Amino acid sequence: MKRRDFVKLSSLGTTAIILDGCKTKDSAEKKPIVYPVGMKNIKVISTWNAGLQANKVAFEVLKNKGVAIDAIEKGLNVTESDLENTSVGIGGLPDANGDVTLDACIMDHEFNCGSVSYLKNIENPISVARKVMEDTPHVMLSGKGAYDFAIQKDFEHQELLTESSKKMWKEWKLENNNVLPAINHENHDTIAMIALDEKGNLSTGCTTSGWAYKLGGRVGDSPIIGAGVYLDNQVGAACATGMGEAIIKICGSHAIVELMRNGSSPQEACKIAVQRIKNSNKDLKDLQVGFIAMNKNGEIGSYSLYSGFNYAYQDAQESKLIDSKFDLEWD
Image (cartoon, rainbow, N blue to C red; front, top):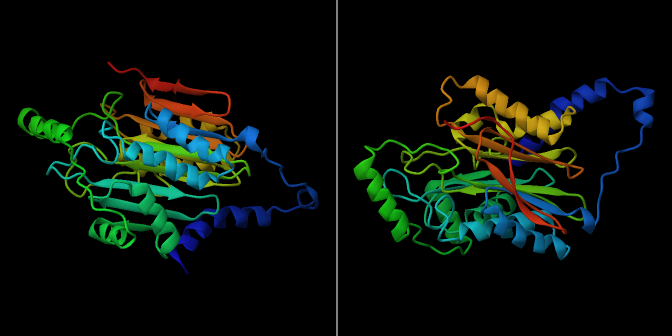
């Protein structure tokens, strides 16, 4: 059995068993739910203000009758290639050793998914993750293996450490005694995105250079299916941003999709996931996390532990940045 098929089966198995055991004559005769489709329903959401420009590119793909998975890749490429963004792609802040290492994952409406972690010297890890999804029997490639695969697929070797990021790294080493910066509204990582296309299909993806000045080899939630992103096309999709270690502990994005499956709205599901993080961590100081979610009907929700999290929204009528609801104010 392929690993990708195992991911699909593991997400469906328990639910299928429960539903099969609960079938009745009435339930068998119920008509399938009809979800909204068509150009008027297409939309994109993504984390943080960098998502505004990424959404515009993604929405152009959808507007031209493109599919959600293409919108995700092309939209996230914009942020990965932005030299001014220090949290994603080229220009990202390095690890403690001065190496820029990138993580990304992508998932389509048929449970296909691909991921790369600890990838060096490749500008667009989300595109490499898609190649992993489409051209290998695997879900994740890491480190030198991910790099070698990218070169094999004609991605170009690229120096990712810009002069400005190098300067900030050197200042951190001199002035901060190697103490990691707080993950908050001023210092955060990740752009994650959800797209809904005209056929009513969802896709999602996430890309990041990770926690600034992290220990060499550290990987957060962003490339982990079920933590950084997850979707079930019959239910909805969710993405995460913030301190990956806390998100991994509760399988954050998967938890939100399962909450939506069981009747929670996207907003309620995001809030419950944040509450789980709050309850599973003794020390909440400098522990920012935020979630966005979209269900199959195109309804949207978001929630963060602390104030300061926002997300970008784009449809045919408007493009805007929305402040998320939250639990706690920063001191």
